[in-house]
Length: 476
Ligand code: NAD
Image (cartoon, rainbow, N blue to C red):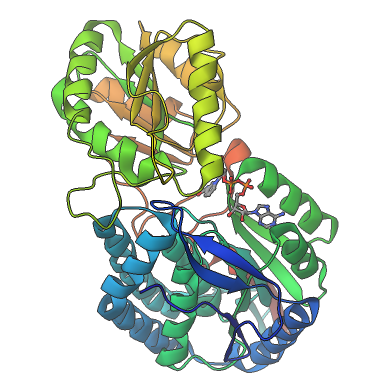
C-alpha cells in the first residue's frame, strides 16, 4: 500500500480539496501509485505565517526540550522504518533494504542533533575595562525555507529539519514531488512526537514557483537546498540579492584514485557496491576512476567480476541490488553520457544502456578509453555509469582529479602513508575518504567546496548555518 499524500501546514495535514494534483509514478513499473496535492499561493502564505508565529515561541524553548523532541523523532523513525522504507522503494525505486537503512541512519542523525543542540554555546570575552562584560550569543536565525531532493528523500529532508528545529528555527520545506512519501512520513513523525503547530510545514508544487515564493518572502531568513549545481546557483543568486543566508549541497563528480600500491582487489570489491548504490544517483557517488598503470588490468578484471553480482530489478524483490532510475528523464540523461563516450571511441566494458520492458532500468555500466574531455568525465552523470582512465604519477592524477569545477567527494586507495598524506592534502573536495568509505555519518561534517556548494550538514558544524552571532557588551 502506498501512503496517502498531503501538505502539512500549521499542524494540519491537507490533501486534494480542489488543489492542483500531480501523479506519483512507481519507477519500477511505470504505474501511477498516488496523487500529490500542490500548495496554492495562499497555502504557501499560510505556511510562512504559521512558521513565523511558531518561531516566536519555539526560539524560546530550552535546548533540553528541543533535544527531547528530537529523541522521540529518532525512536519513532526506527519504529516506522519498514513502512517508510516501503514507501521510498515504491516512489523512488531503491532496493527495500537500502530504503529501510536510509530511515534507520536518520534516527542517528536525529539523535546527533538532539545531543548537539544542547551544546550551542556562546562565550565570554575578557573586557578591557573593569565592570564591562562582553558576551557572544548564538541565536536562531529565524524561519528557514528548505528544498530537498529525491535521491535520499527521507535523509535529505530530515537533516535540514533537525538542524533548523534543533537550533530553535522553524521551517517550511518543499520535498521532492517525484518521491514524496518520505517527507509526508517525516511530517507525521514530528507531529506524533508533539512538535508544536507551525514549527514544521511541508509544501509541494512546481519547484521554481514554490522556491521563488518562499525565498522572496520577507519572513524567510535562511535557505537550504540540496540538488543540482545549476538550480543551486539560481537559488543562491536570488537569496543573495535579498541578503539571505544559504546552505548549498550541490552535485559532485567524485574522482577515485587507485594507486599501484593499494590492495587492488579489496578496492574493487568496495567500489562496485558503492558505485551502484541507489543506481549511482548519489551526489558523492564515485564517478571518475583513475587507476595507476601497474594496477589497471587487475583492477578492471576484479571490478567486472564483482559487477556480475549487481542484480538489477524491482526494489521490492529481495535479491535486487540495484533498482530503476528514479525518473524516465534520468534514463535519457544517463544514456546520453554513454552515447557521447561511444561517439568518441570509448570501450564499453559492461552494460551500456537501458533495459527493455517497463520501468526505468539501466544496466550497470563501465566505460574505458574515453577522452578526458568527454561528457562522462566532465559532467555529473548521476547514474550507474563509471568512467575509467589510467594514470602514471600522483602529481599528474591530482591535477586531473582537481581539474573540474566540482568539489564534493574524492576517494583514494593506497598502501603508502606518504601517498595518503599527499592525497588528503592535495584533493580539492569537501570530503575525502582514503582506503574506505566513511562519509555522511551523523557526527562528521558533510558539504562541498567550489561549485559543489557551501555550508555543512552534520558534525559539530551542523547548526552554524542556522544561527546568528550576536555580540553584547554590557557595563554594570
Ligand atoms: P533538476 O536540476 O531539475 O532538479 C534537482 C532537484 O532540485 C530536484 O529535487 C528538483 O525538484 C529541485 N528543483 C529543481 N528546480 C528547482 C527550483 N527552481 N527550486 C527549488 N527546487 C528545484 O534535476 P533532476 O533531473 O531532478 O535531477 C538530476 C540532477 O540533480 C543531477 O544531475 C544531480 O546533479 C542533481 N541532484 C543532486 C542531488 C544531491 O544530492 N546533490 C540530489 C538530487 C539531484
